[in-house]
Image (cartoon, rainbow, N blue to C red):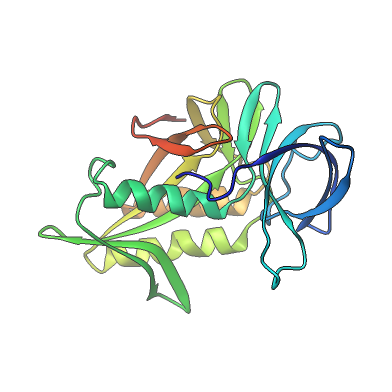
Amino acid sequence: MRFQTPLVPAVLLKRYKRFLADVRLADGTEVTAHCPNPGSMMGMSDAGLKVWVEPNDDPKKKLKYGLRLIEQNGAIIVVDTGIANKVVKESLLAGLVSGLEGDVRSEVPYGDKSRVDFLIENDGGHTWVEVKSVTLSRQAGLAEFPDSKTARGAKHLGELAKRVHAGDRAVMLYLVSRDDCDRFAPAADIDPVYAIAEAAAKQAGVEIMVLRTRVSPEEITLDPTPLDCL
């Protein structure tokens, strides 16, 4: 996935109210950018971090910049959680994800007022795929999810388990949205309820798939080699 508009380097001043971030541009101008990340952004909110923002000239948007990437200890991390679905969709349509080939549909209603990220249909039947963007890393090389409590995430795991019970295939796909990790584990200390829900989903037959991205200020692409899941 290439960014539609060239990203602009800046320095993070503060992130606040979940969806706002003040940054300083290279010319010294301070602006407020939209921060499209509902999580805690643990370890990624420190003042002074290098960031990249995407400018826009849309008169309908109040904020003229969107926060896209953060550099932390040499690693480039995707802040915008919506990018994960775009990267996965491009890769699915291109047939780059082994085991997830077929006709791809997005945002299909299922379960209790939910929408699955992707429904893949082929001769083997239906495969329901939820995607989670993973940004947290507290140990070198280890990516973790979630970075804050997520009742919505636990609900998605339950919905996937129901699809397996109905005779379909279901996959929870964790996309590691940073370029410095080669292992993955659930952050059970942050959200034990989610960890229990994931274990129950796996027991029910939900497949866990962990992939990572190659990240640069120009584009984000999928590395189709699965990561070790602890």
